[in-house]
Length: 145
Image (cartoon, rainbow, N blue to C red; front, side):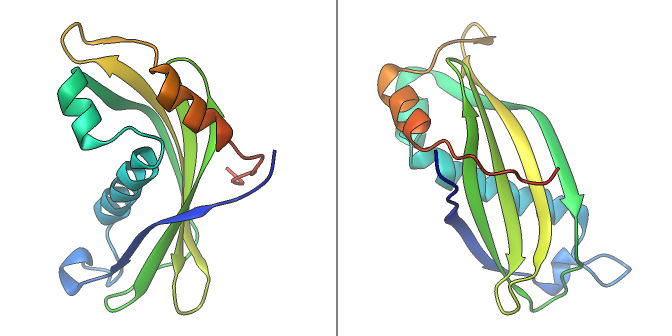
């Protein structure tokens, strides 16, 4: 196993992302991490077409966030992501949000997602193709949470 993170998001902090304290509000951290999640999943074959065509979904069952540095309006952000663990029905992964100009880590999150049958609303195994692609990308990264 090796440690590797891929870029899954690039974006800017806009003034409307900031709260009365002048820094990006927590709801926007979660939103940007969510966008990164769908890029990460797409890379293993959990695409919008797959979800629509098969009646499956992914649901978050646990999320932990560590805020490290404030980000302000005008900051350019980059999120790098890695798969930490993959089981038949479960994917655990992390995102690291960085200030693209300074390289400073702004926040880290670790999430656990479950593959779901949207009709029965019950967990179900990932198809072999997606499972194999995900397992091949698991890293030994310690996200520090």
